[in-house]
Every structure is written in structure tokens, then in C-alpha cells.
Length: 266
Image 1 (cartoon, rainbow, N blue to C red):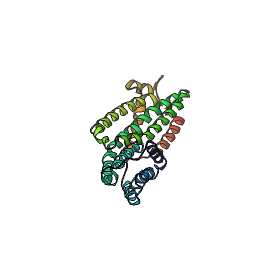
Image 2 (image 1 turned 180 degrees about the vertical axis):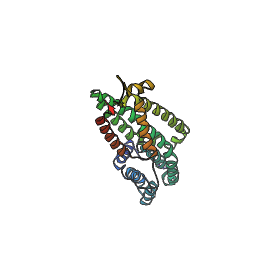
Image 3 (image 1 turned 90 degrees about the vertical axis):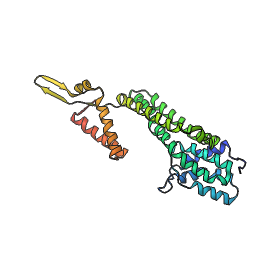
Image 4 (image 1 turned 45 degrees about the vertical axis):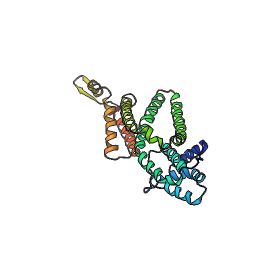
């Protein structure tokens, strides 16, 4: 039996802001469930004036939950929409919905939120900065604030869709994720040649002839060294599980050594 829905647009945005604040609340047993419970706490209290119903709902919110943090507000909003309509009788449906949808949406979030969009905008902004164009920092700031606004509005969007999220998205989630992956890889591949700058200063002398190694490499394939460098970074980070911070330090040290010995050239 459904009940009268009580949550408002203001409530949804409050949950989104609380999610941004409490996202660091994490454990290895229930993953992001504490962050989820913190975000929806005041909304559940509003939905359930009865203490027993509120406790049951809050315990349900504390069950295992983990998805890409930037896409999570959308899942949260849809779950709130289902629960606000169905009450305590919908708690099992709410949990099943979260478990079923968080994986596919995490794939979309990881592809778009972690890989594609930040890489594209970050590379463009960095390239503009390297050329002395101050608009690069404003481009990055505009992207950051735009993405922040989207994350706040996601709860409201999900709440309005409710259980219809499944019927409206359906198999399109998988297709969309694969399409984004292909597009992201294509864009990143193109950015390697235009953004990564790596040249060698090594030369070979044969009599009076001085042969530059960089010229030979460019004859085989232009921008070969940047491709090899990125490939090695991917190998060590993905296959050898080298942390990103460690990889950055390794790159800095190797750059110093290469520049000092003449292996690398400007």
C-alpha cells in the first residue's frame, strides 16, 4: 500500500549536499553505506515520524552499497522515490534496486566521471596553460562547478524517475557504457600525441656524420616515445599495481636524470 509522498526538491538537494560532505565515510564491510545513510538521514526522518519505521528504514540504508561516488546521488534519488511511495513495505525492493543498479551505473560513472570527461577537459586546460593561455584554469573551474551542479541535481532527477529508472534505461546502460569506453579511449589516444611531450637527445656519430635518434624515431612513427611512455605507465599501474602517487614520483625522478644526462631533450 503506497503512502503520500512527502519529500520535496529542497529535501533532495539537502541529501545531495550531505552526500558531498560525508562521502569520505567508508568501511570495508558495507563500503559506502555509512555515507548513504548520513546523506538520507533527515529525509528518512521526515518520511517516517514513527520511530520503529524510521529505525527499520535507516538499518536498510546501512546495508552494503558501493558505486561510483559521482553517479551515486542518482541512485540515491531513485531509491528515495521508491521508498517515499511504498513506505516500509518497499524496503526490500529499495535494497534490491540499489544492489541491481549500482553496478551498471558504476560502469558509466567510472568511464565518464573518472576517465573521459576529466581527461578531456584537464588535458585541454593543461595544454592552454602550457601555451601561456590563462583561460585554461577558467575552463577547468567551469567544468568543476558544472559537474558539481549536476551531482547536486542528480538526487532530484532520480527521485522523480523512481522505479522507472530500470524500465527507461534497461539495456541501454550497457550499450551506453561500451560506447563511452570506445569514445574515451579514442580521445585519450589522440591526447597522448598532442599533450605528452617526450623527446630524446641521444645522437650517434659515424665519422663526420652525426645522427639524431629522435629523427630516426620520427621516421618510423611520429610521437613514438610518448606512446611508449604512456604504455609503460599503464602496464605498471594496471598490471603491476603501482600506485599513481608512486608513478608520479618515478616520472619526476626519471625526468631529472634524463634531462641531466641528455637522454631527454626539450
